[in-house]
Structure formats: structure tokens, C-alpha cells
Image (tube, rainbow, N blue to C red; front, top):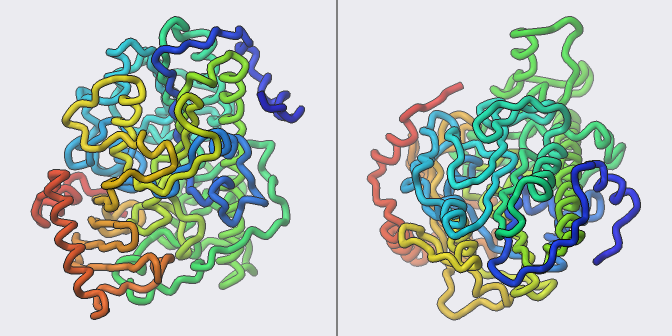
Length: 520
């Protein structure tokens, strides 16, 4: 077992209900610890080597990468919180599982087959703790405790949870509370004679990026590096990237930026003041901070709060890894670390997700399983989030149902890519215009190229050669050099739509977006 710094030991033993009972190692079905953050960009994880790795390291998440496998090419099918969660649970695209969007969509159909439900039927003790955000009561779990505030989005301080069907008001910081509840379930609630599957799902680091009180000034006066595309002018993408309402410059609110409200403001007036900025209203912490200086100040405030929120997340990953160590569970436990999708940390001048551009399409994924995975392995094999459920079921020795559209990526655990492995993926995003005015679109990504069609109230195609234009700054759809490649990609795109049974007409696709549409 690795030595743990003294300050970490103090943090870890802050919860009195956890003891070290040294459970005997079991050689049967593996335990599954599925850890999922919310809106965690791969760029924010130091194991991925991004621009924040030395300023804001994530040592506990990195530990999983050192002791397991880090995947570099993992993609989501619909880059938004609830839909991605539904895809992961069911192994099916949004158009088949029925959960298309967060705003104006239908509740998740909990009668569907999900991987926790199948694990439960196979004798696993199952639990889901933290963020659910699917608007229907979880099924397939022996125990659940999930955020209910703010449409199940949750809040950072003093949140309310649904615990096995009953509301429970809690006091404290959501990330730490989630860690407390998970440790308590592992130690005091589960049947230790059975293998377990725990979905350990954080609200963090979702908007509004509230750090724990101990991390409010974690980065002090350090100037965080700006991404190279921060001042993107959206040339050649005016109707798509250029029409969004998620630029750091114009669309962060008073609440996002933690600007103190005027004295005496309360109730509806305070609530109205807090959201100023979401429609592009001018907000600034002072009368003198304006223009380019204000834009850069907003980025610094945003990214420091975001990364400070990630710090607490990383700490609580460390707490549960220590529990596994102390209780002889590490060897026979599959630990999965991921996020529901990617996120923009200032790239293209943005925060949030939704687009098929790389930063929001790519998901972090790290897995530790000592019985099968050599420490320090990396893989460039393509994975899609429909593949998560089949993989976990296969590892547990449970038959994968035919309705699941993904495949087990266990063959990638060696770090090698088998012959014939998938080298293209299909994407489809539906929600519009709220939030952030991102046009619905579908597309294909291969190992080198990306083709997207934006279709709701525009008809725009975009094409990118990721080898020559890795930051996706130039839409090359009308470049004659790529005429034949684009034609072939359109054929492949149609084939993927048929494969995944997404063969609706454009008008039928628009109807999905229009149903329950929420506007500003």
C-alpha cells in the first residue's frame, strides 16, 4: 500500500463510521466501483497532461491511471448530463432509451434494462449515491441516495437527497457528503458476503462551481494559462459556434462569478439578480473593469472556481480508494473513473458542453483492475459510452442483452488495438435553444475526420481534418480538396445511422427538439 501524506490521513479519517475490518480477499465475481464526475473535462485531470497539470494536480485520480489504464479516445453520443447517464445505464442511444435532453424532455423510463439491474439479478449488492438527474426513481438498486434540489441537478451546500424514496435534508458540502454516504454504505449497509456495484456519482464540478470553504482561495493570485483558442472569432462557423450563448465573455452570471449582490436584496429580486448574465446582460465586479480586461478576469474566476471544485472531488476519490486498500478490496474491485461528458475550459472562449467539437465530445476514462490490467497502461482504442454497460456486465460474467448497442472494450485492456476494432462513432444532440443556443446536430467522427450536420432551423454542414486542424478552427466542408473524403464520410454516416437505428427524417428529428421546448 502506498504511503499517504499526513494531511490526507486527517481528511480521510474525518468520518467516524468507517473502520478497517480487513475483509478477506474474494476470488469470485469482481466488485465494481463506478465513479462518475459531472462536467469534468479531461483537460482538468493531470494524468492527461493538460495545461493545469502542475498548477492543479489530481493525485488520486492520477493514482488510478498509474495503477490501471488510461483511455485517450473515449466519446459520448449526446454531450449533456441526463442523456449521457441514460446512455451509460442502458447501453443504448438516446433515440432508443427515450431520454434525449435535460430541458423539456420526458423522465427516464426506469422499466428499461440497465446494467445495475442485471448485476442485481446476478447477485450483486447495488447502490447509487450522488447525482441521478433522470427524474424517475432509480430501479435496480438495493440502496440509493440522490440529489433532488434544482430539478435533481443538486446544490453544493446543505442539499436535499432522496434516500430510498424519502427526502432527507443534509448539512454540509455536497462533494464531501457524497463521499461520506458512499463510505457509510460500504462499511455499514451492504451485505459483505456479496459482490457489490456502487455508482459513486458527484455533482461536482458542475455549474455554478462552488468550491468547499477550505478551497475558496486555493489558487490565490496565480494566473491560470489561457487555452490557445480562447479568442476564437468563429470564422467559417458563424451560424453554429458563433451563435452560442456560452461564451465566458458574455454569458456568465453574477452567481457564476460570485459577485456579491447589492445590500438588502432578497427573495425574487435576489434570484433575478443572480441570473443576470445568462442572456448576455452585462455584468462586472466593478465599474472600472471592462472590455478585454473583464473578459480575462471572468476566465480566471471561472477556471479557479472550477479547478477548486475538482480538488474536493479528487480528495473524495482518494478517500474511497483508501477504504478499498484498508479493507483488502482493491485487488478484486474494478474501479472506473469517468465523467458524463467533456467540458470547455475556455477553449473557443466557452464553458459548458453540447457540441460535437473535441472538448465536449471526449470523455475521461480510467480503469483500475489489478487482475486484468497492467499498471500504467494506455490505450488509443476508440470507445463510445454505449460500450460502458456491456463492458461492466462482461467483466462480471453477466450475459449482455442483445438490445444493448455497445460492445465490451475489455480487449483494449492490454493497450493494444485488436484488428477490426471500431474506428468511427456516431453522435446526435437534440436540446435547443435553452440552454446555450446550440443547434441540434448529428455527425460522425473517425480516427482523423469529423463531419457534422446542424439541422434545426439552419442547414449547415461542417467538416474537420483533425490531423491538420486539431482545434477545429476552420470548417473545411467546402474545400474541394476533401470532396471525395466528405462523400465517403456521408456514406459511413448513413451506415452508422442504420446500424444504430437512428433513421428518422430531419423533420422527425426537429419534432424531438420541439416537444417540450424551453426558451429563454
